[in-house]
Image (cartoon, rainbow over the protein chains, first blue to last red):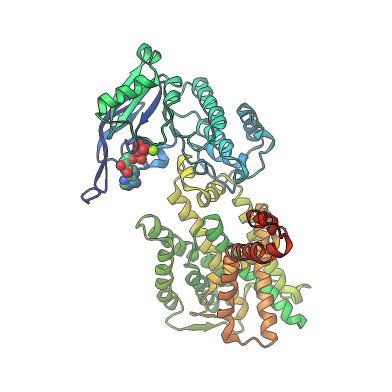
Length: 264
Length: 319
Ligand SMILES: Nc1ncnc2c1ncn2[C@@H]1O[C@H](COP(=O)(O)OP(=O)(O)O)[C@@H](O)[C@H]1O
Ligand SMILES: [Mg+2]
């Protein structure tokens, strides 16, 4: 379970460009809950993820994961429990290393990285089994460099890397936004499978309103660094994209301005 | 090229290859150009010369040099990661500081000669292999360094180090402390550089406070020459390419000098070689662009007189 209380993040504090990106943000995410996050440009969605992951320090507030206070923990320590997939497909993998080497690095999470062989024989077989599950034929290209893969293949691989050591929390920041629609669909389907198979608590930022409702168990809408809508259960099941937009305009008092936002 | 000159430059090339492997580690593996090299090379040479001339074991001198180099590299890494000074500037600062340190190590003198002193190259003296003592020792050392480095880069720690140069986001997301990786990488890189300096000092029988000038450029030249000629396909090939690159660089320089290249122009030539090597990608892009334009305007009209010639630049491209 993750509890975020009173989180505050200000960029450029004390300058004319001061920007409150997270304003007193609080929420609790239960075990196995799959939250989809939507909101206009600059609503603070990515900032939220980066604060949870430890990329940014926060001004105020607390982040507690399974009873452990992570608020001041450095990014690499939090990563033991947090899996991440970025919007930019090139961010999730080491391009000059092979598929199996990338997997080995991800698989080493939380373990000592000493002078033992980077990949053990038994691990190669395990990685191959895992790659088969992606259904992209990557199991036959384990010794190929990741730089040769397409964006969709990389995102699928990054997803596998983010979950190969079961994380307590999975963070996905528009991880399909850079992909063409069919590939995005494949990666989304994989996401659903990984999340349900491992029962992962998940945050998924998406620019696709329909996907926000059709995936996951709960949807939050962000505006100016806070939650303006939080739906789950029965209410969410019957909700349509039109309802979402209407809700947004009512709560935010303005039109939704995300130019990349997909309604269908 | 006379044989002794060739042998000599191959020997020197193999010693400088240890330095080039260090530069490879920082420049390619960590993706950070590290200017500490000019100072840490001399640091190694200085410790080597002082210990040897004091009657110490010459191998011990090399080990001390390695450790000293590691410390120098650590300082650069810490300036970068803890004080957030840009890597280039951090390297320059440490290089400058090392100039004083090196003078101190040399006992305030600008150089120390090592005449009639036992060095690592005397290891086979009194055996049947005495005549080949130098090349044997050098060959053993470079093989040892290559093997260790190759094995190291295949370990879990080595993977983490390599990935740090590739993509820091991914590395931190995998639970790895990138600052620690930079520290380890920079330390090892400068340890190798100092080892090379220590070996050169014993090889040429003196250490001089100015002997490191432009060393980083020679290292880069070796790395790039190796890559251009031997490729970058596998890690093993890359490492061997660096060694061969260092040897080729030395041999070419020795040959040019035997053909009358004045020693004063050496640094300029090195700088030009590295400039060309670093910009080969960009230059070929420019050339291609000019060629395309040329092909479209001049050749295109002549070869494809149809009015659609301009709309199909690909057509002109293939001519
Ligand atoms: N590194 C940064 N430096 C300064 N301002 C930033 C930074 N990152 C985000 N911001 C600002 O914070 C606000 C929230 O940004 P972000 O979280 O990226 O929004 P979203 O992901 O919802 O589109 C925006 O106004 C943005 O300009
Ligand atoms: Mg964003």
